[in-house]
Length: 429
Image (cartoon, rainbow, N blue to C red):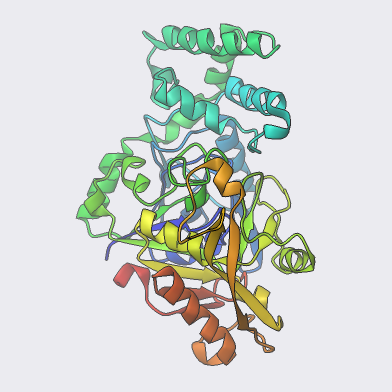
């Protein structure tokens, strides 16, 4: 029995939804600890697709407790809309099964507006955000001007909080050519958010009690390690820490409560939005990977950029994120390719490097150094044991393990949850 943290080891979109669903069947408590509704998971259960953004993956399974931790930035209307959508698919979401941290900061219209205004003003230098207000909401949290969910009950201070929030945002809006927002507008938004209060709880205490009772706890991360605000390809990153360490701070448990970190890793590489991508293939290979892998964002629908597997990047994610084991996904997308390439090092300005440089300009000049290996002609699709895999596919997996410094605990061979080769159960390692 224990706690497992799930993180993406690349730029997100690694196929976490299926793996998290597989693990959530074995966990009693499932926690979202960072990010917002800019990230999404697609679950396929008995042929039915569930697309989640804010709700933890455990909500689709009866008898589980789902928690949205304090490290998340919460758009109340997005949450209420997602709850109704799940109910429309026959999933019961209630205050008994869903708990939201009392101190979670809220995303309001001023955050969404500011996101869009900044991206428009940046023009060709835009970061490529989802426009959902995630970054501005985190800024307000750090700037100590956020309105948190529990503040809706604090009638003595809510007006001063609104004033402080608008003093900041209206000055920015004026500078960006937008009209100011009235306090009445924010009050109306907060009033509309009140139904979320029914789900609030001291979630840190619930987690301590669950840990003490020996329950399996799954900490569900969003995005990927290379989008981490500190360790990613800054400034083309998200606004939260996506590495495993943030599971503790983002949910209110101590680091000793995190027993194992599972890094979800795609058998090739994809990225959405702007920023460096050393192994990107803007050719037939990139198009083939995108078509076979159905590489479109769950939340935005944006087409993902595709390229060869980058072992340097994943190894760096393993080291900075404390990843213990890998769950390798979408191996079947590589079926039938005569040869495969793996990036084993970088070259930057004539220098060979075994890590991604920190400087933005140098990141843009990174050239991959590839190792070419033989592909396989057989199919891995739907395989549920090592014996069903072509020999060259097994060699590919073993070589990935060697290059990134972490063993594979799970291998996914299709979107269906049962098409999984289990090497080690992450809850019992």
